[in-house]
Image (cartoon, rainbow, N blue to C red):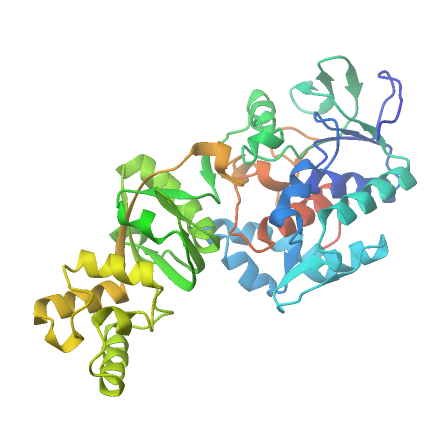
Length: 421
């Protein structure tokens, strides 16, 4: 969709970026009577939104605001005003209002009933048209105009547009194949904002251990990963794990990768401990195997281990423990038996790398939150400049967290400072 317009027209607001945050910011402002110009550098809106959740579009989740914010770590409290104004209940109601019903089939993750991001984007496009928002695609913003205090407009590769309010909603560096280039970081830095170090997040990881290649056939459920460093001992995640030819992926890896990528840069290698036995500790594993031996005393070590793990993983752990998989468990030397049980409880892996932003779904880092007012998303440095979504230094795990934050921050920014929370 492309609306014709005059580059000399003055707008109340210009929104840069037509992703989740920018779309709802533009819609919110237009609903409050503002004349809005929405600029998107790609040929279509919502490219990253379309790919979210494998195209199923996990919009949000049903956690309370407190629990939701806790999953973002130390900076999570910054979201308090935005979530108070636009939580998951409000988001679900908003989409219902524009014709998209949603549900939470597992009681936690919220999807459109269609389980298709196409229905989300189509509804947002219709609302943009209904509100008379001017949308220009294939338009790259090159710089912001200001007098040292107040924003006055911006310059694209073709035109100059005037407005006393600009919202930067350009996202981060994740999904570069969908146009992510970090434009918003460059624009913000040029007008005096600090951009923190940027790291790829929500991505597969590479490990030093070669045995993982033998275990690619199976998905392991309810795996817990924790970082085995004293300064990161409280960092852990739980979910499905998948081994790859040179590392690990799956939801649990996506969740913890945001914590690991900065540590790789610092230490070169990050040690992990992985519980693949659905949370059983050493004592519980020992009791489980003892019970299995009592029921089937003649069966092999491998057979008993396969009551806890897929065969490929069980064989790999036997190799690590130098234990004969075909021997009876009670016939193993005590050192090997104890080593095997320790490996079943916590399997060590060492992360040594990743494939950078080309495989990252989101960005760790962004525009410093210290320079943004959480009640309005307005810059503390330039009057009339606002930010929303991933361009800010705030990122969460997978499961609807980052989309909910994009929508909530966009909703607040779209009020242009005139919001009661």
